[in-house]
Length: 161
Image 1 (cartoon, helix red, strand yellow):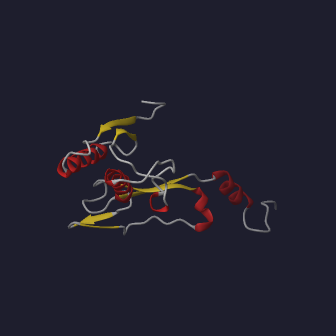
Image 2 (cartoon, rainbow, N blue to C red; image 1 turned 90 degrees about the horizontal axis):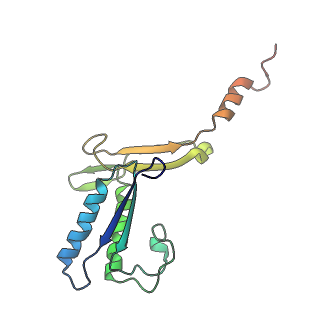
Image 3 (tube, one colour; image 1 turned 180 degrees about the horizontal axis):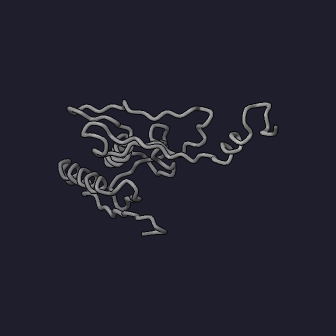
């Protein structure tokens, strides 16, 4: 635990390049399964020898890649990228049923107050129902400004009689 925050660290050692695709698939599915056990309010870090090269930054994976890659992406690097992207895509799916996935549940907020939205995400699991997933939004509201507006009353009146 670090400053009241639990951090789960996975030290992973992927199968060698010469191993079968079945062994590699098994490794990645086991890693996904273990990460899914981590509660949503805890941090998760994966590190280790994943046996792949994701290559230099490109616009397709810029949202998961810090831009400090080296060389060209290889087949094993593609598995690493697929793992990272699939985890992010999984956090966009709000409805799953019959082998189909979609994003049909939303939270909306007025554009003028959009700066108050700090994060919006889907919590994988069956918190709402078997098919629907919980959608949460973190807001930081400026209460002081709201109170001042209420105290001033309608335009043109300053509360004095």
